Image (cartoon, rainbow, N blue to C red; front, side, top):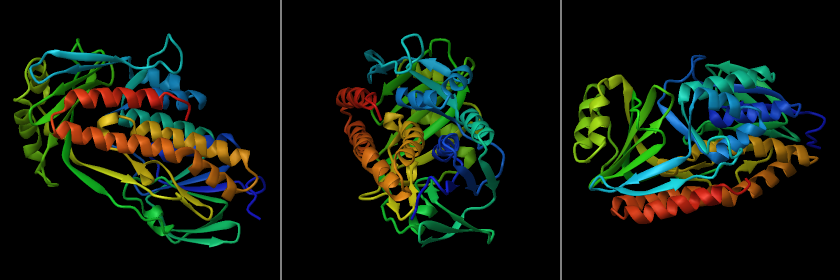
Length: 375
């Protein structure tokens, strides 16, 4: 019998947004949680992300929204600007955690990691660094997990939260493809202009660009480069190349462009998506976050899905007598929502490449409204 009420032990692979949120949610419900994280203890380097309303709603249930609001930058609007630099509309996003609180929060990735990590440890989760999962076997009602340092754990639950290139997914025998969409996305940290009090999104002839505040002093620039192959540029070329790509945008983008000065603050990554068809679980193992459903960045909602996954996983395991039943209920509850978000993000990427920006704005607004519905 795989009763999770008699043996609530779990190994989570990956200490990212999904893994740390799941660790906190499970530990709150009485689970003994160990996280295997291949990276070092230091907070990961990174630029920023947007915690949309669904993210904040889930974090609020875990008691973490106030910390994110305090250390990030609260916002309520997305301002669209057309290819001529003229306003093309403003979207007011739903305020899901109260009319007097922001609809979304821009936050530096290392800051969010610190908040989630501290809460997981406070709840009793143990994080082991420099190790990952090496082998997985089902043993009756348990999962035998061999870690890369040779240690073995027999637990009631294995959670793969190790990203789009998940090792846990492969070891569980769950197959999916990684799809490239002819776009490379750039990000750079810059000082926040005083006028940037919400997200600004600029349409361009060869791509799109934007700005997301992260704090009173800091923001990040993003640019989506269309019609390109996957490639790697030397670090020294990143900042000059990004400034060059931003030259084609009129208006306020010129001010943003002038703020990009250090190559250390610039990254360039391919736009990849993944969507696991069918079950996300095998036996008492399951994958969550980008390991199950990785959207394109156009909807700024990858973190929302990851945070929701961690919370909903703990909820469904608490509602069912067995781990297997809880995992099946979790996958059933999450599949349609996550599919909608991934597929919408891919459609928006295509509309951007076709310069059908107004259609992309309308679709994005509609998707945000759907995501505002309960998870």
